[in-house]
Image (cartoon, rainbow, N blue to C red):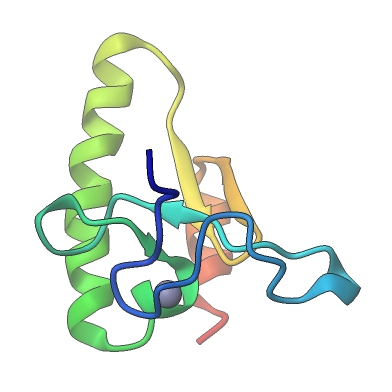
Length: 93
Ligand SMILES: [Zn+2]
């Protein structure tokens, strides 16, 4: 099976984007039609960000339904969802 790659930039998952910080590409199914996208591309335009947030909202609800514990996607990766984490992320940009 082909390795999943970002719908926009084509980087593969776990591609070492910033080795100094130990950062790797993490793909999320928040692109068009559920396509895999990396965080940078996901946030590259307001439209994409809105799309991702809309999809993320759907996922958030389904997580709550199954009792899996909601998470919030931040530039550092997923963190447990909380009002504080959400506000901290929104204050970055
Ligand atoms: Zn990308």
